[in-house]
Length: 215
Image 1 (spheres, rainbow, N blue to C red):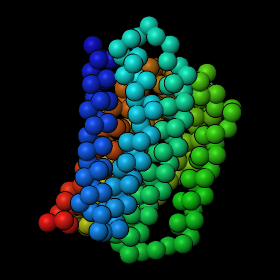
Image 2 (cartoon, rainbow, N blue to C red; image 1 turned 120 degrees about the horizontal axis):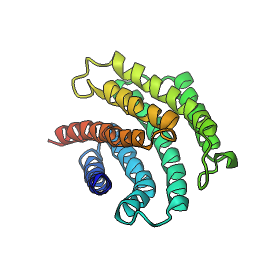
Image 3 (tube, helix red, strand yellow; image 1 turned 135 degrees about the vertical axis):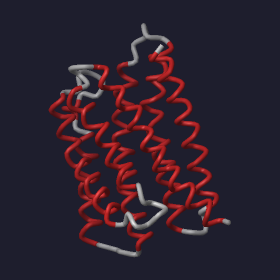
């Protein structure tokens, strides 16, 4: 029953983000900030189905072997999520008119490091996926998240993105236990659902702003 509910949630999530992401691009195409936000949302929904669709098949047909597609999908999603956070930083610079070359380079280096670690064969994405390598590749990713949390927290007076820092914080709060303990207790993997909800919240915040800007 839980698996079927998860499958329904995944389908609803993919459809919702596609609608919102394309909506942001259309409504905010004349404003760089919102166009970038729309692209960021579409990057999210481009990568996530590679991981979520195999999970849907697992829910529908538990006896099937989807380890390869799940592993490859997880790798692709890891890369697109990295790009997602780098784009989020660029949006931050544009929105608050605060270009910072050092911080931009830092985010770029962290992104490259994270993607490089994701591509290392030691990850064994389609096999055991050693926990130690899961930790390695998530260190630069977590640092990126912390940077975004701190930056948006400092701008919490911005009513439109007042809770952006919290959405990012909670996404990592739900994600990190999965990285550390999902192999010990598979039920911890269910935390990926509320984590996904945080990304929906982020996209909804962008959609509302793009919609308001087009009125």
